[in-house]
Length: 386
Length: 195
Image (cartoon, rainbow over all chains, first blue to last red; front, top):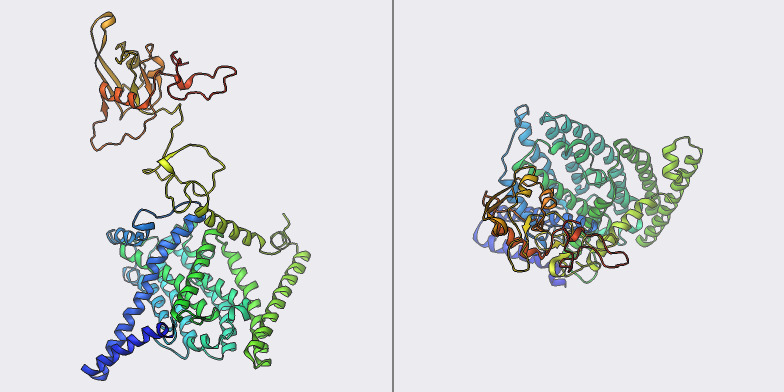
């Protein structure tokens, strides 16, 4: 198992030594870098192919249907059928659109998502760039997506797309705040911004020692990835798919790829930060990483099949009035817990107990407030009054 | 508890996901209902209920109005006497008949039925005094040719396939005290016209 764990690294090392024998160092460096980039792109695109199938299949099964089952065994090659369909469509640019921005926007959405892959540790030592500010980099790239969304919506010159832009700005900017609080707790506990060192610091997975932070991070990264129940900016039933509306052919395919890539990123980052990344007994590290990621992806799809979309004002309420205070409380608690206890197990235990206390307190406060409140909505949600 | 409804929802979808594999006629690894024939109207069916059309078909209910068909008498001859009642009854000029012969020998020289114009109203069948035509249960009538006009041979072939002996047998009221369902094909003695 040790052997399997480091096999990809050994292959890479072997390629490097072969290259060193036949060319100068800079040439070998460049070729190795290109190989890494190609591998990363493959790791980024392969989940897209798998998830298009997985999402349809999961949704279908939850609705007592088969889902795709004609193209290939169990419909496995349905993504390729999709690709052929999309690529043979006409690529239309609306006459009123700002054509340069319109054409650049899909790239602006797709490229940052691909860039985040650089700091994801797929296995022991299998990270393209172990930045010492890896988390900051990932969050920054997530924010660049907002620019892509805005330029796609604005340049389409379409009312629905514009509504989508307003919504996405409100949503993406709001959910970065609770996300940052959750990430800060992780950074405090592990003492580093580097993704690799965060994984190594997880003697107990952070999802166990601070479930609150994990929950906050997961929910806000769903919002960042525009997944259900926070898929406000492409809500088909209200604003007819929002920013995708004027796009067709190859450019639409780029949105499509970006969407599924975002699911993978949500899963990969949640795994890295909260589920112990590539760590796990017996199996090779990269198997653990992809196993955990697939589990998170399943949860994302499961939520998609189940929960309806949240209204925009509820969405923002949820971020600012619920997730942000909880995140702040959690941050304070984690800071105290990891300062008090030098033993990581003790710190994790303290943090877990504190998390549960915070949850109970929050629930109690909600009930108290709801009892005194005149707001029908609050009473209905918290106290279950009709 | 706060959020209980959301968890309940998650449980329901998960249960359906699991059930689709282990319950119902299409449980794993079986992809289709055995024989490809499916009874209609099973409200309590569990597991997957989607009809996978080209591989599975519904058994059409007895009074389904499909393509028109011609029926044969006991000697195997078409019962049609070219009386033109159906042609007159048809609101869209779907049927056109050319007759030949006199008296008992009168029979259709040609009988054409334009499927493209038919609205499946069954007025032709109700006008027929000779128990000669009925609406079959066939509905898969797409073809690559743009000629959807069927002649007497085609209609007789459909009638033979359908297994219908007399017109209106599916419309017959059940006998009092008779526990049998109405309109099973080939129910002997249902000789009356459109009941």
